[in-house]
Image (cartoon, rainbow, N blue to C red; front, side, top):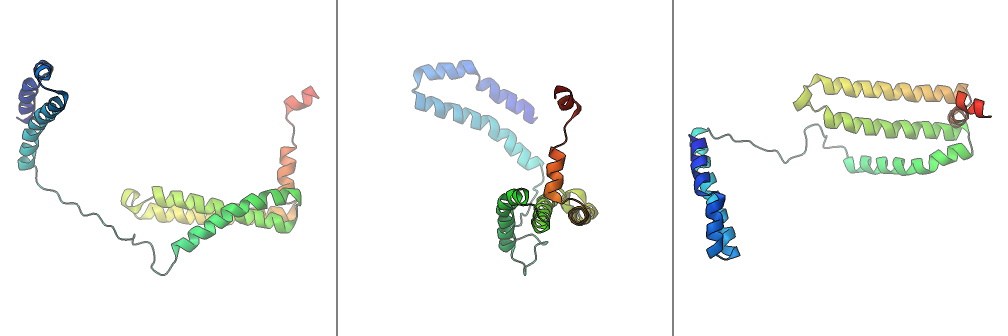
Length: 184
């Protein structure tokens, strides 16, 4: 029914009729004429759809999410995240220029916490309970915490019992491939 009404309106509003009317009307009137013709064509099916379809109300919440606690300050966490990110710009070169266990530990902590916050933001954004259920976001967050703690523990073990983080990376970069040995 509504399709036939749209098609009838399209016949009245075809290009030939619009061109004929454009010859005798100025440009401003032409645009008004086209807008009115389109409006007439679309109003009839919309009115029919409003009668046929039930009214669906949707309420949108503009309050803070329930997961955010009222006691914590998220602006303070955001500031700390930015300080750690800016601090990485100084810690990374310092750890390679003057390698020591203290700078290696500082590098390990700052890289792991920076990575943890980044992946946590992805988990919170993409593992929403309304999309994937209530269990999967909790499992993903617990897995992230376990992975971050294990990574930090492994880096501390490497710093304490081996050459250190910066020296280990330097040695890894110094490895030459088979192609480089043939050329030398």
